[in-house]
Picture 1 (cartoon, rainbow, N blue to C red):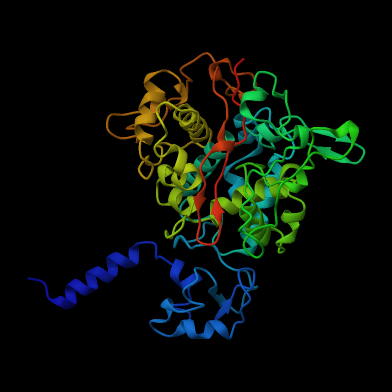
Picture 2: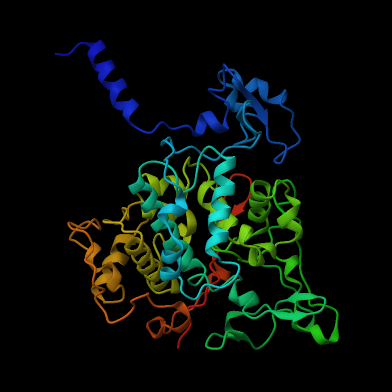
Length: 456
């Protein structure tokens, strides 16, 4: 029988080979000792000083304020700029640059009809900006294969959420903008009054003195969320039925950032000021830095309540299902078999397969972590709805036994089909504006898609 010492050594070797969980060290100060480490306070969350956080270095302090508030005190390496870190994956940084793996030609293949602000250069610049600032880096952790896997997962999710990068704003709120010399205006609509074929709102939601107040949690005020309230139509005759979109926090950008709390949190990371996106949420629909940056913020920084993980970490650890559960788990894990999301999750899987093919991924990530996802994958393949997924399908597991074959199993798409002219999408419409909210520790987190998948 091996000695206790031998077992301990073997355990140390085994554990040392695994990525180390750095979340507690990064965000709670429990191991923030020695060298240049300092336990400091996050003043964007509460009025707090670094001195207040000193108590968090003591054992048992996690039950008392400020240590009991998730993320209020965090461990800062004083040799680096004072930016609050993202949750750590524990994987080593790769030497391969993200946009050396995902090229502009690949971007054009996945999204041939992409519109501004969804530019390839804007995406790469947003990634580089974020990665220069933070130790945990998007699409640059682990092996090259892990980088490709993460790219495929992110692209699959965001092409689905943004209608293959053709929708900068949520359609039920702002399918068609109205441009005037004084600015841009939107016509919010109820689903029953929306012409999905022509993407046109017949009766404004703010007509006859009504108010628009979706995605506004009035309880979440600074420093937890942007100030928000009921929005009425613009008080001008030629702008009746229209609202100023800078007064509302509906879905925008590549991952359809929504809710006033999320705009503030993303602004703190991307703009160094909570006020930037609170006062100008339209930047997410018009500026590539924020259209892509908010998606990257959610991917790398946002974590579910009570769970130390992110979509970024889930993809690195091999779980597409886990990444989806964070993005839209309340609606798609599992999806209501009689509702819209049962079809929506299938389109998400199809575009994940398209992205995986373009990235040269040999096997898909696990569907575990999202209840019902593998069954949706089987349905997607068996019905012929997802021909791009065929070579990734094997019994009992989504991992293929061989690399995907070069030929596409249908006549189209050679450059893949576009959301804007796909007859195969007949009958599918985005109705996420009425979806449930997912609570986070200090705010309400929900990602509501805006993309229109309307009938042709």
